[in-house]
Amino acid sequence: MTILSAQNVVLPAASLGPENPLAPLRTQRELHRVENLAELPADLRTNIEYGQLHSPLPCLNQDGYDRTLVETALPALVLENDHVRATVLPSLGGRLYSLIHHGTELLYRNPVFQPANLALRNAWFAGGVEWNLGSTGHWTGTCAPMHAARVDGPDGTPVLRLWELERTRNLVTQLDFWLPADSEFLYVGVRLQNPSDADVPAYWWSNIAVPESADRRVLVPADQAWRYGYGSRLDLIDVPHYEGTDLTYPARHPRAVDFFFEPRADEQPWIASVDGSGAGLVQASTERLQGRKLFVWGQGDGGHRWQEWLSPGLEAGGYAEIQAGLARTQMEHLRLPAATDWHWLEAYGRLTVDPAAAHADDWHTARTAGATALSPLLDGLGDREQQWQQVVDAAPVEVLAVGSGWGALELARTGWTVSAGTPFAPDTMTSRERAWLPLLDGQLPATLDVPDGTLVAWRELLEAAEDNWLVWYHRGVARHYDGDEAGAVEAWKRSGDNAWALRNLGTVTGELSYYERAVELRPDLVPLVVEAITAALDTDATRAEPMFEHALDDPRVQLLRVRCALETGDPAAAHQLLAAGIQLATVREGANPLADYWLAAEEALGTNRPVPARYQFGMGGN
Image (cartoon, rainbow, N blue to C red; front, side, top):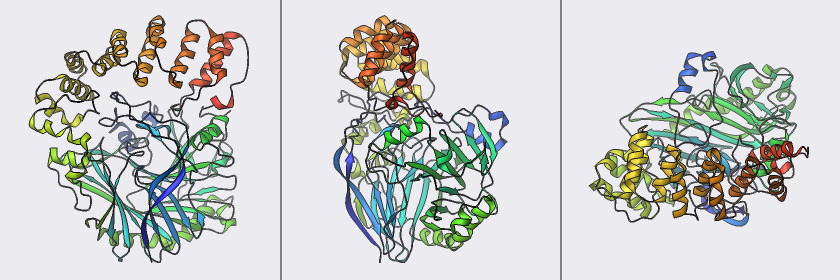
């Protein structure tokens, strides 16, 4: 018997805090940049050059979180039978938080909820299975709610359905969690609907956190992999041996690295992580989800620091990621045709392989043993997908959680048709979404002091709307998004004396006077002050001083004080600030400013004190 229930997961959690109201005119620096395109196969190069996202708009950034952990009840939906218990977090991107098989946790289950700066919108948390779509990176909905409902499954058991509109691509995302009564595997049916009349770049990677230990090995049906070592190159290498190391053992890598495995045409796609006894988690899928990946933080100081940062209080072990995607690598996007949907079925569960075979020195022996053990599952996946397809459009029977109203708002604008299985009812719109409805009739009342994220796809409506400061502001953002920088500047100037338009002018033109006036109007807005001081330090450090005088005591501001001290010839003050301790909640993956400034201060002072462990966020080795 399969049971679907609503429960709570209680754990120490940090607050997500408010969204950043400043328009994200550009994406944060993306780590997966490939500079050796000319050396790559033509299809891989074409996919990498297609569909790159230059802004997460209309979404706003989520950088208001802290690092204060408070016991918190997170809403959860639990699907369980006599063998398996799956826990899903509908308010956090539908994360599969836990998967337990006969009392044994198969996933890396983070004991805390701690956001950190790794996603397209900044906030991201480690652990479980994350569903990434839209563009390279952790998706815009990873820390946002999804709609959830019960659907009657093809075998009469309850299916847990989650769905939402991915706003950067306007793709309807559907996740159907299905646990047949006698099954030892959880099935996840995924569908991406493109309801528009235009082709859309498509991206998907199921990101699976698994425990990392010295005896764990990754098994995958591949003999080659594309290695990305965060040095701007993709290189095709043989599996399993690389630079004297068996790359299939995650704990043997000295630094952060990605391996995108080349799928074998004669085998179905799967990937597993097994321990010394040959047991662990396996993920398999039907044919559309071809890509497979391994990511490790590495055993260097920076890797250990990131593991601890993402799981405060971590005493031993950590996690690695095994992943499954639409393309061979995460740098690629595929073309999803207009009015088309793509679907596939994934399976998650326990794999047991003879340990001598799983850890054999001969790679063919090891991966073949995994495939043989999986053959009953793999042979039945196609039939399971056909069964799931019988209910893919079935209407929800019972609403279990409510996501955003953005889907309903887009349907009101476009008249698109979406599946009855993924409805976006008008009553899901909150005041936030309803504030845009008057624009459909040519008006956008300037009733808000703080503008929301610009609906960049609504540009034609914005251009035709009745003028006011808010309309001019949004016109500017939409024009900038479309590459019309001169038109954007004109619009923001016509928006008038408000902090939002002035900040955008400062960002685009580089003129500090715009930033200075914006800070005068909103000295309480830390993200604005941080941007303004950064701009001043980039051009004229003396103009940063007045902004420091009234700045709040925020770690981001403290870090800028360190930089200012270094650049104005006072390394002793910089060292004093760093030695006192700065906990920068929003330190970005791939960035290491705390260590960089520490080393700069030491060099200027002629001393050689080692960088404190708490400041080691580098992704290289020691």
